[in-house]
Length: 518
Ligand SMILES: Nc1ncnc2c1ncn2[C@@H]1O[C@H](COP(=O)(O)OP(=O)(O)O[C@H]2O[C@H](CO)[C@@H](O)[C@H](O)[C@H]2O)[C@@H](O)[C@H]1O
Image 1 (tube, rainbow, N blue to C red):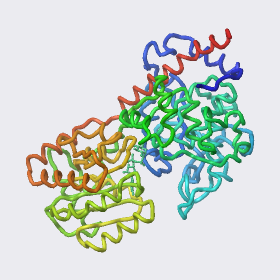
Image 2: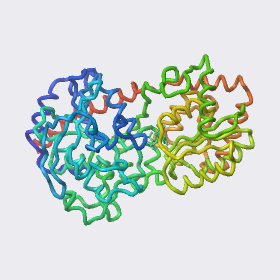
Image 3: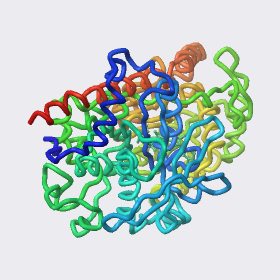
Image 4: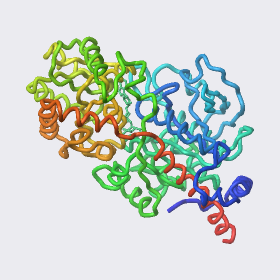
């Protein structure tokens, strides 16, 4: 299935083989190599140190840091204005134009904790207002194919030793469609550098018209079912799934789900093949240490499971900020991108059961206009009981987790989900659809409430169970304590990624000798 049929780049292979000639480099001694261990370039289109549109931004800030104890991890990100503004950026390399992709410089930023970030410096592609993906009106940038092909090609170039950097990665770890072309560029130039693609959300695939092949540097021979073609278009994500050495996603349940037609978004066939090869893995995300209700500076007051006084202070702050009346009933929250995936329509439909149970609901989110409008109408219809804020606000989000009793998360699918972990850590019990990472991180009836049918009725029945539990102080206290003591650190999944890297790197030599002999 792998299309690595060209003559590999000899110089790179020899460098890697020299570097990985020792037993430990083949993973025989685990991953305890320290910061002088394998050089990993973590390629991402968002990182919450600079700019975040969703969960990927948080994972990109946390996972490279969790891996630093054992790996020499550096990050590559487009040089958006949010990345460069007010920072010391040293130009350390230059990459040539290729195909229809412009030349760019490589800038180095040293973050306060020592993490090194390389920025792809190309103002014509990245120096714009808006988010990494859309303009201020919410429209996709029309040149997103070039913007993210340039990111991917920069990663492949650096892995091939181009650009004159004094640091050359041993392995690329790419994330979602914006960097998923990097493994393909490596394969097309015959590079032996291994790559790992993490899928944070299969629903976003980076699909572009067939007439962009030349601009993007896709060889005509790769525009086929065993390559990057997806129903007549170029699929960046499929390129990554097809060419990466290994594919991971962010929970075991989602890794299983995406091999089925219901969740596979048309890629289930290829994903089944990768799974059969033992190349599809599920590693659940962690949450970083800033999510600590005792010390979080964003909160109105700190608290822990043995003293929930501060939680009540946060509930008061939320009620005030969202225009809710004083109440002793249950407070439900939603903190979410307002998109179909997240089942926002189901949460709207469940409002009746929440209000009937004497509860209130506070919603923070932004996204599709139809959901923003519907939620604002709901708040107007139930003043004092439903509060809605359209926007993206870290402090409000943290206060909502801290102040609410329950978090609604009826996602139709959820690769991992972070909000349900934050909520549990802050003593807010998630009411969630039993899917993907939600099924893997919530214990039904112990740390939250799961329901199996993603419908208004399914959610309403779980809301009923939550309201019922709220009536028993003892039960609530037990569940809160169980939720707050869940361990969601990065340690375990960082170790799993480390093992995977070691395995992919260790395969270099055998793969090469077979090919050399051929
Ligand atoms: N209006 C707002 N204001 C402030 N903060 C807001 C906000 N709306 C959302 N957030 C924050 O954004 C994050 C959302 O993360 P999720 O993992 O839940 O979803 P997302 O779908 O973006 O990520 C995708 O990638 C991640 C990472 O792998 C997977 O966990 C997930 O399943 C997948 O869909 C949470 O930290 C939440 O607090």
